[in-house]
Amino acid sequence: MAGYRERLTADLDLWIAAGLAPAGNREAMLAMVAHPRRTDAATALVLIGALLVGAAIIALVAANWDGLPRLARFGLLIAAFLGASGGAALAGSRGRLNAANALLAVAAALYAATIGLTGQIFDIAGDPKTAAMGAGLAAGLLSLVGRSSGAAIAALVLIGFGDFAAPTSGWLLLAGLTAVVAARCWRSIPLAHGAGIAVIVGLAAAQMTFVPDHGTHGLQERALVASALLAMAALGGRWLRGREEPGAGVLYGWWVWGALWAFAAAGLSGEDLRLVHRSLWLLIAGGVIALGRHDRHALVTAAGVAALIGAVAAVMFDLGLDLVYAAAVFGLAALAALIAGWILRRRSAA
Amino acid sequence: MTRMRPWLIIGAALLLAAALILLVLREYQARQAGTEVALRVQQVDPRSLLSGHYVQLNFIDAAPAGFDCDGIGLKPDQTRSWIALRWNGDHHVLAGWAKTSAAAAKLGTPVLRGDVLCLGSTEAPQVEMKIGIDRFHAAQKEAEALEALMRRPGDHAVLALVSVGQDGRARLAGLKVDGRETRLDWFGR
Image (cartoon, rainbow over all chains, first blue to last red):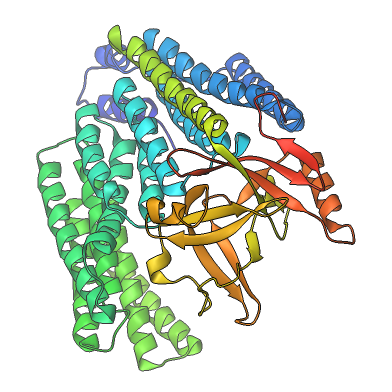
């Protein structure tokens, strides 16, 4: 795919040929657009060399791990963690923010591994939930002090593991909402992705923890409540996207996925009101596709398409159709969509 | 990145490393200060692809005479109870269990936190003590040597050396197989 500079050059030449822009301004206009960063061969070789050295060190340590005294093993882990953190601080002080971010994510992962391996090295009995939560909190601290989206995502993953380790708890929802705020303040799109998913998963964990389980009906009610909450959150994300808030579009997309997923889950575990559920599912899926097209939002459109496929599959399953019939129905639907697209394209061309 | 931020990163990293070192030191001190008991261990499975090499520890022994084991399984009211031990020649055995440490201490000493699970038949009941320890990590060669030792024909005394702290928590101190001790220490492997 051509970069912005290549596309602009081609467009500019077209505009000059059409007399829309003066040819004398061509070079000055292109000079305002920076050349995309490229990695030269020497830098690439240095990077590969560094990776191979790292792999060699890891292999050497792994080969001698059993032979090392406990204290040495523990010292190596602490040194690796401090090395990654120190590297992040050094990279940050030199303005290499991407390197600092990546190294802090590595430090967060190393700290989590160190917690687990310390228990193993010294045979300290502990519970997995506390270990995961502790590692998550440590990653959260590193992300806050270093403004690192990578460490923040690591924190969300670790807290998520902790939440689902028995007994379940609802901390991921709180962490996810905090990450939403951090993603906005730091203008971080990767963190917005992590926060969006964390809120969905965290909501499920919080419901499992705080809402009493009343069997099948309880599950359906919980899923419907989750769907409604996520739909409202998605509307909020859509509104913020309209105000061009950073990361709002990503949150809008993920929460639409979450709302549709929860709505689908609400009807999969019971007989009651199945027809109403399937009809609403189809209707909502169609509406979401239209909304995604209207908002020019690929993630929302994709959620609608996935929901539509799921709804059609569920209806066919309900009707007891076998896979051959299902293939035929999907094939016919695809053919109809292709023919309609072809007719529309011909009309717009005419 | 502001001038302060790299120092904040270093400060946070040192704090986290110190917390972990402190945890290890406190566990070591508690292990050293505790009362050591020797508990009989049954069944071994010295390998796990994900967790490294370890010896699985199941604290199973014959139920003491007169022990209330009228049903198999963990009774709901037995959870988070206190276990009382008593010395039985070459190792410690279950003396009884109670809801409080004071009540357990009347049955035997030392007392530690844990649950008791009844196994086997009602004619020959066995008890398994759940004391929060379930494995002993060892280097590959050591784990294999322990396994070979325990798989030899004949009756082998496999004892877990457990330190019982002031808080009632059990901490693993080592393993003793046929008189050969493997202790957890700083410089051991």
